[in-house]
Image 1 (spheres, rainbow, N blue to C red):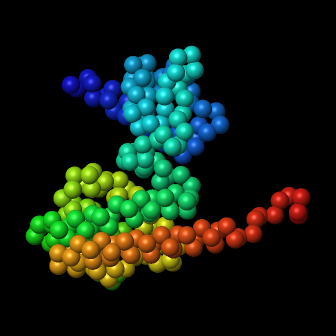
Image 2 (tube, rainbow, N blue to C red; image 1 turned 90 degrees about the vertical axis):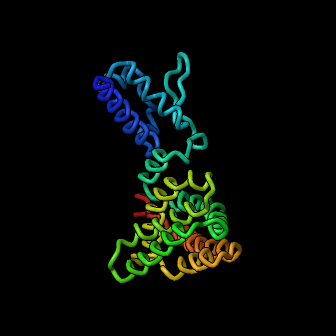
Image 3 (cartoon, helix red, strand yellow; image 1 turned 30 degrees about the vertical axis):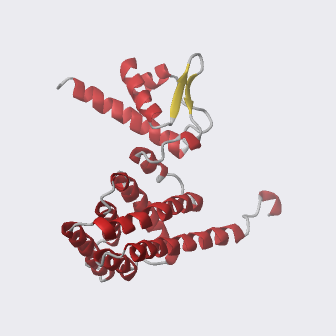
Length: 247
């Protein structure tokens, strides 16, 4: 056991560096090095390099072809629900289109989770949601980190849905929200989310009103999406930078 641990750590380290490089565009022009070149770069045995490549293949990032080496897969084949892939994706230069896509996904998933939470949440889960909302109010007064409070609320609703598929989204939502909330707050020129909007969702869940909970969550996310569409239009209308020939 003690001898395999360093190998596992090195495998994960290689997969992390290569995976981040693929998603952030480091290999966009030259492609991935050969398996032997990767082994030489990291001072690793070929068996360890192969394990790292298998990890990336499982995430949909690469495929190995005989006589063609290791090929980077197109983005539409990447497993965006994988927490590592999402984390690396969030480290790319800011893209309002990526943010819109993520928010559109939330719009389809989280309102249903709120509806289910209103139907199935236990007393303990309802208490957790109430605590999360109170933390958001505290954040508005500077007593709590606003980002953590906001993420805590959305994760609490997913957990209260008592739906296994919703539960599987917890890490995905938490990672992506870290990026999304920071960007939308930046667009708004604010440093916190609106606690009262989240409180509307919480009250509907506590009252056992599924339709109201679903609608309140939909409206909460839709407001953020409308903001993003406005930002995209604004960016598209900005004049292009003058070229050297215009100087």
